[in-house]
Length: 75
Picture 1: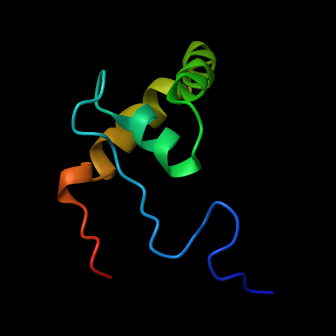
Picture 2: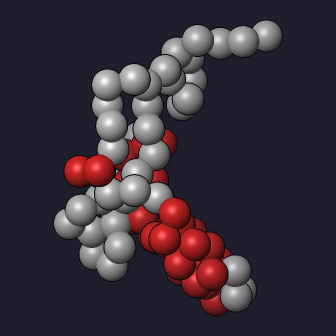
């Protein structure tokens, strides 16, 4: 079953990090993508960082995700 444009993965929706983020803008970009408050993502990240996974995941996301200003919106 393929759902075009339904749920959180709508057609044309792209994941990115914010240009003016607190650290690298990862939590803010994820908040916009999932349409939730970025503070919720920050709390989840802080909990996972204490478990040792969050810091590595944040660094990887900061290196891989493009900034919002660098995202191509024409396709």
